Image 1: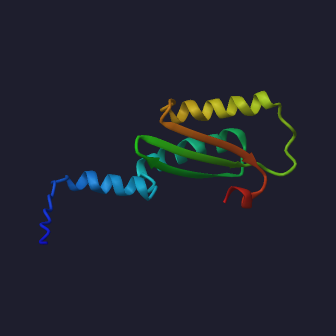
Image 2: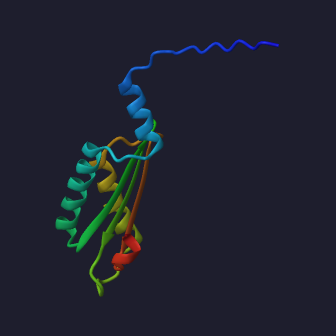
Image 3: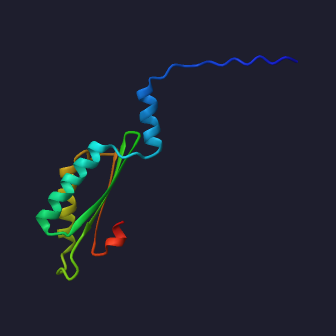
Length: 115
């Protein structure tokens, strides 16, 4: 028997293919990373943290943002409400709250834990 194979090529804009590939590979959009770093640096300066680490990825419509703030050893304890207030401030400054934003914010004195 002779089998006939028909190949249909559907034209797809190269920009769509590039964005889909970037989403699959969890490529960090430069503009989003810069905005998250700007917000985090302002928080570092305002509250006296030593530094921060930011990890950002866009997955489809979603934005995944992880922020780690490095606090000096020996800082006096804060109430949980105080840490929550700082988290709320960061979330508002980053914007985009909703089902497409996944935001994780952690505080630590251990640089290795944030890397």
